Image (cartoon, rainbow, N blue to C red; front, side, top):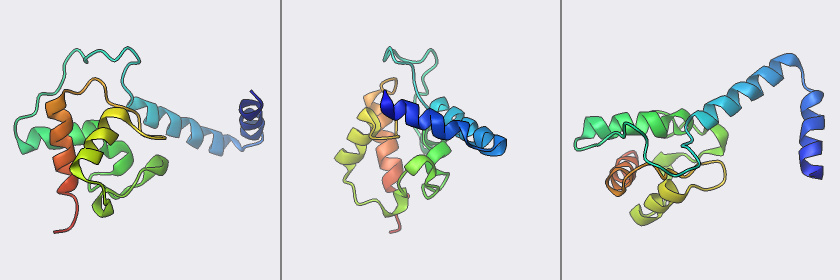
Length: 124
């Protein structure tokens, strides 16, 4: 509770512009989050080709990682220099880590396709 109080106290001392930017940041980050029930979204994106995987990446990942994987918003990692294996990327997408939310609404196929897509963002 003390940590929350410290954060709120720091927020109260911010300028209105900084408060607006922080609020916008929180809205952007939580926009990518799924429901806490872990249920499938009502219209899940089923991917079978690269255009659909790219669309899924843009919807779920690009807000923090950027279209090319290099953006780095909200402490997100540069995917183009990531050293994670495919299995590690799959686990990261499925379970999340720190500021990256888990993606329980995605199917195993969608998660694997996203992992393969992020691996292709690395230079050859």
